[in-house]
Length: 162
Image (cartoon, rainbow, N blue to C red):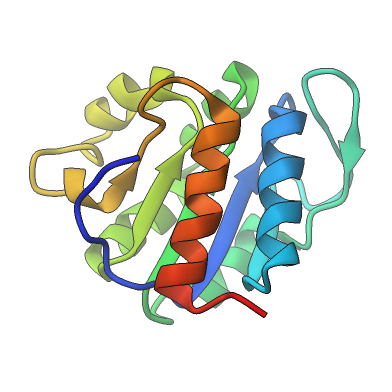
């Protein structure tokens, strides 16, 4: 995980689309909720979404509802789910781009479950030298360790412990 001190966030949003990495998303969501973090599962579409190996989940809200809730409401942490199909769909959606840009401009943070999307974020001019400190990245490629670090970050930065 990036070692820069990140500004505290008010809320966590996990973005998913069809083909998401079920193990990472469910683990992250459950662990954060277990420690009392306010976390919302955001989906495109808003109905049932099937992951890479067939697990279907129903998001808490749609991308449209997320945009309305997150825009202008202070800092937040956005978690971009892993899975090639999922990240491709998410990053090609203008609402996600606008939400990520707004999050960065408001001093929020973005956690990326897969480093493979960094070139895409760079092409979108989201990943840049000025914004690099706002990104949380897995350091050693172990998703479970990264999720544990994210949960710790939310407890410390968001005051999410019970």
